[in-house]
Image (cartoon, rainbow, N blue to C red; front, top):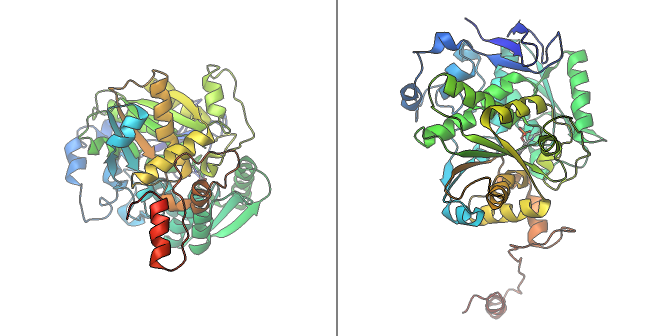
Length: 431
Ligand code: F0G
């Protein structure tokens, strides 16, 4: 049986050949569902392990290694792949001690081809665009989605159109979208305005929409946790901690993990901890009212990647929390930037939003929710070079309202040996 689109609210089903993003009956979000009965017996941990280190397309991709769980029916020659994935899982004992846990790993999705986890989603989404014969693709973005879409569209010979909040996109991301040849549109107004606009544009002009409302994106992104589990030799951690913005990633993790249990590939679910910035925290607010109401907020945070007040995948994230007995925490910009400075200083590096994973772990340990003996996997979502401006501002103390707790001072010396020696002595390095 082919994969289907299925509404998460009313259960209506649609063919994957339809050009739709939400349910035609009730406007609910759609899942891509696969024929697991047909898959049982054909897939195993050993099958996926046997493809590790493969040189063959599509299995050398860390997304398509799990093809049977991502999009089993798609012909290999339609797949648009970087290849992506195969990102490192770092054991970080020093950062674990700082967070207050014995076992912490950071999975670095900034090691994808365009420097963020979005590539895992884009390979799924752009492949589906090609399947449907689309020539133009679009997204609204805080930056990383647009960089990724621009690259994958270029590879697939499609035209990408990306919408940004004017003046709010980190330099690395804007540079990428321009470089890869996307049509870049700056919109006055916040991300949520741009998101609504692109949905209208896509619908009216028949351009394929590749925000994470597109369920084929989420099928790719769920492989982050598949790969992490594989790297842990399928030993399920107690927690997976992930930053939450538009909530596509957390939604995909919930779906993917539940599928692994249903297929017998793991025997229990890890708990999901979704971490939002204090100034962009609609899910956190909902969590504390038992999701009785859905609040939209005017987002404010220096972690521009997650500066989102009305996330499109909200209902799927709530479902993921329900399935995994998950929790939501919020962290301040100060906590985000200090955690980021420590991740950077460990030689790993990440963009600001990614550091929610470490800052949130520390906060949840302090609150007694994550236990010191728990095994924790934190997701680093983007590369350190995505937002170079903020790094320099942090280390030079130029951020208003932020203490540069872990600043690495930028020095200056006249070009003489004596001057350099003096600066080194002042900096506490004895010579
Ligand atoms: N971290 C980074 C680096 C991101 O770019 C994003 C989202 C997130 C975390 C949050 O992930 O939306 O799945 O909850 N960036 C999107 C973009 C919104 O447009 O690039 P999420």
